[in-house]
Image (cartoon, rainbow, N blue to C red; front, side):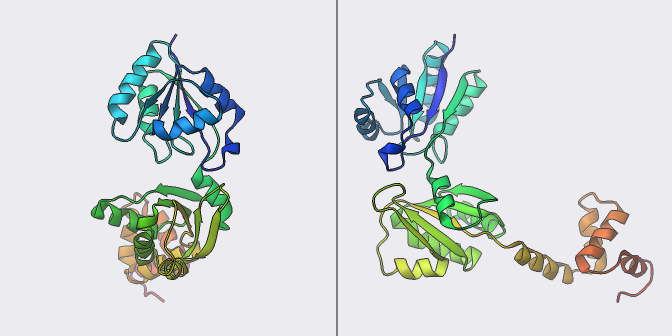
Length: 283
């Protein structure tokens, strides 16, 4: 029988967050695939785990995934861990999971710490709807496209950032989003855990005086639905009624449905739109 892949969440700071199930699984599997074996050996030693390790990281993720899948096809059980948190979130583990699914290997996830969710719950911002962006792309063109998408996002947004890029990223967020509420989280679950609810401009002013330290999770307020509505109204006001109708008809609406939607957008009755389109005058 083929083996399994176990995605094992590890602490993001406080070792007491390691679950008994993860500890037991790491002791029982045949191999532990770790992002950085030099870092992970400290964790394994702390919990008296002596399972053999192998490296699995961004630079060998495809070739090594094939090798690990082969081992599981031969009956070995493998656990995947990252340096901190849940594997496959902003992590090369997603490649291994995809390859396992393509080859009929069972994958199971042992839940535990995740910096993005921990920060979201501490942020004080809306948790009902949110999106995870991770690190912004390093490519300038791709980053501009992502920031443009985020500028229209109404859900709470979660990003990761390194200390030496923090100020630049805050400047880019302000340029794309304007001044929004933001909560900056660092040293999560550790002794000096810091949670700073502020605005993007407030964060910029603070970190122009204070040197950023540690890895950051940025939780950013989404665009309000009222703001999106106002922007939509502004765009409709720049359209003629014919252009407004064509906008919806080009999306597949029939004439009657488009007329009803145009009337709703403009805050008038459907009869007024009908009269205008059939020779009447727009009021």
